Amino acid sequence: MESLTTTILEALTLLFSGDTELWTIIGISFRISTTAIIIAMIPAVFIGFVLAYADFPGRRLLISISNTLLAVPAVVVGLTLYIVLSRQGPLGEWKLLFSQTAMVIGQVALSFPILVAMSHSAFQSVEIRAWDTARTLGRNPLSAFFIIMKEVRFGLLGALFAGYGRIIAEVGASMMLGGNILNSTRNIPTAIAMETSKGEFAQGIALGIILVSMAFILTMSLQYMQGKGSIRT
Amino acid sequence: MTDKILTHIQFSNINKYYTKKHLGIFTDRKNSKAILDSAEIELKGGECVLLTGQNGSGKSTLLRILAGMLKPDSATVTTGFESLSWRKANKLIRRQIMYLYQEPYMFDGSVTRNLKYALNDKQLGSKSNDQISQALKWANLEHRAETSAKCLSGGERQRVALAQAWLKQPSILLLDEPTANMDEESRRSTEELLRRFKDSGTALLIASHDVNHFSQTMDKRLLLDKGKICEMTNQVTSAHDNVSLFPSTSNKLKA
Ligand SMILES: Nc1ncnc2c1ncn2[C@@H]1O[C@H](COP(=O)(O)OP(=O)(O)O)[C@@H](O)[C@H]1O
Ligand SMILES: [Mg+2]
Image (cartoon, rainbow over all chains, first blue to last red; front, side, top):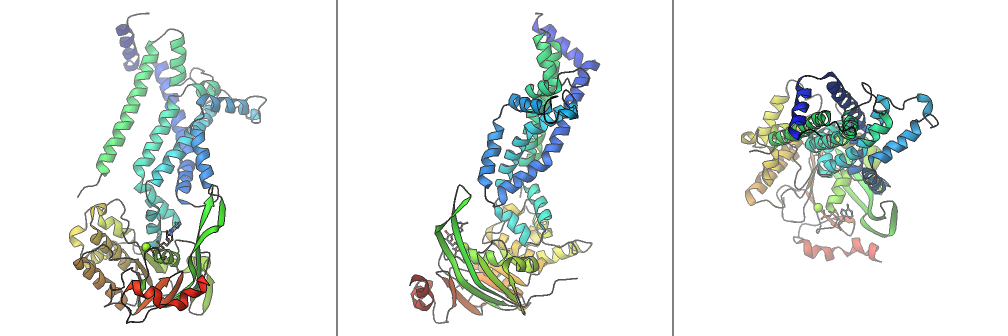
């Protein structure tokens, strides 16, 4: 193995010289994960809201189920979807396996429980009084829903970031469902795993730098927004 | 087209149990407690009714049922000549009833922003700023217009809530212990604002565990005890005495 300094220099060169292969991988990663989070977000936030405020039989059971799903490892989610999407599987005819669509499906499944659980607790942080107040002020249910969403915007953003963080860096499901095909389904985590196993560290380090910078930017921007939204007299 | 204005409304046969649930699914009727037991109440425009009763007697529960926030086990609502179920009435008249919490909830943002939430779509047009500044003036909150509402004192929150009511102009205003933790001065200014609602024809129902509050404003004093409501005569002044003064309303339950 070359010295660490040389490898890091090589990684930085890859990043800043605009290496096509590297940036294609980065583009694929962000496109797939962004699509997945947008698809998962809307129903998940709504379910989190219903779990927090609606009173119906079986509500607590649903909360337990959603929390259990949080703990299901990504490889198990990947395996399940692999079976469903494979040739002999129930959805085999759709020929989705080893495509970006399959990866999006996998990432939707992975981020969904996090989004539900975290938006549920975000909504729970606001008392039911907020909802009742909006309604008694004359807001219709939809408008009251948006008012409450505004109340918990930071919690919801936190949920989005956590969900995004889980799927963008996740190897198992991406590998099984995407197949790590260059220029199609090779994303950041599968590329890192493969390059590292070949003993090539430069590309892996470059991609790692991207992931860490992204995490840093997301966290900082959340903090910045929270600071701006804090209470002042 | 505005809703027809309610000037007279009667709620009867209001029953409410708080049921215990197992695993959040199975209701346990045996361990349920009747909070309201065929309670009855009548509200008229321009009339101020004071609802007293000890802590835990069910005043908040009753008000929230009337406001449409809490589902009763049964209730009949009569307006004018029609008799409706609670659910049906809730759809038709909810917009004309407003409930004010003891500690009103303030949304994120300025007082002005909070007042905006009380405007209906029609009011939200070009004149909305006018309306809001009038409301601020009405409640003596002009100096607080841009203050973050979450930073207000209890008395100021109550005034914001009343300004919201002023914008919404409900036919019926339900207030839950509006002056419970207030000093004398805030209490007086709240009572003054409530009197203006009354003079403009709003039906007021004020829940208070202290029978001596609002003596200047109220027309009728009711007592909620053991799930039933009865009218109190004027010579009764202490909430503690009168529980036993009305055996006729409670012996049915304990028979
Ligand atoms: N959500 C609830 N679940 C179960 N019991 C409740 C609930 N809310 C209130 N209670 C009970 O109902 C009774 C009446 O409460 P409440 O209406 O708040 O009385 P008040 O406003 O007169 O003090 C109390 O004994 C209280 O413990
Ligand atoms: Mg109460």
